Length: 266
Image (tube, rainbow, N blue to C red; front, side):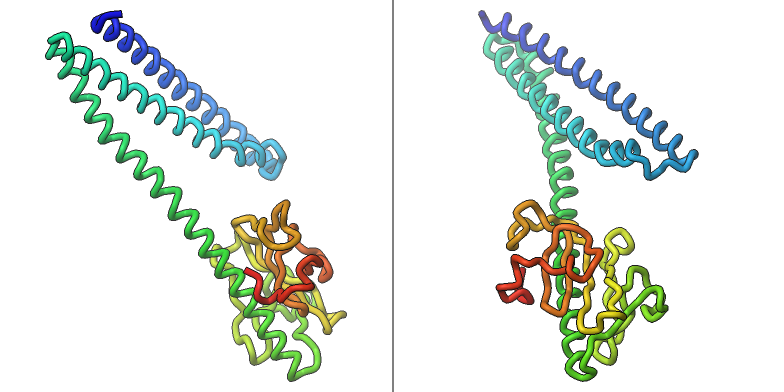
């Protein structure tokens, strides 16, 4: 195959790639329109929490990410093909074809570099922010445990809080608004209501307590978390990672961590 044949072969490949990218965009547009239709219909009929809406809401961002990555890969291959066409054209003395493909390739390279930089910048800070919020949640739970220890040393029991008893400052989920004189204002989740703090009613068990935070990043490093722990708790025995949202005080304790210095867990 001589240089001219290679040029024609590459041009055909480039056209096919552009055709694939066009079909992907059309297909994604159709899926997006269907997604909006289903969500709009579900909301209008008060089915917003249905399994189909939850599934679509979870799958759609991954579909979008897959389409974006695929189109970027196609654009990279098409750009490389333009460089190859330009090189072969210059090798046979066809300066016009060489220049017509070289300059678009250079422009596409700059554009791809910009898009990839923006894409990575959009992902990395978000992950960093979520880890920082989780660090804040862990710190808050340790602060609550520390305040309860000091309260117990003074009162001989832990500060009690019951949403139904009306002594939680109007907060949801049996979570206190303060702990005696040792914590004038209980900390709130840094991300608002999406990952709000909660607690277990301990008015009938003042020798125990439990508060918990929902982490954004699953922990698999702590003992008992090989399959993932999504919550971090504050209890009378210390702080723990637990797999699921606790519904009892016992569920706030990770039995595999009780033999270690649980308050120092990272």
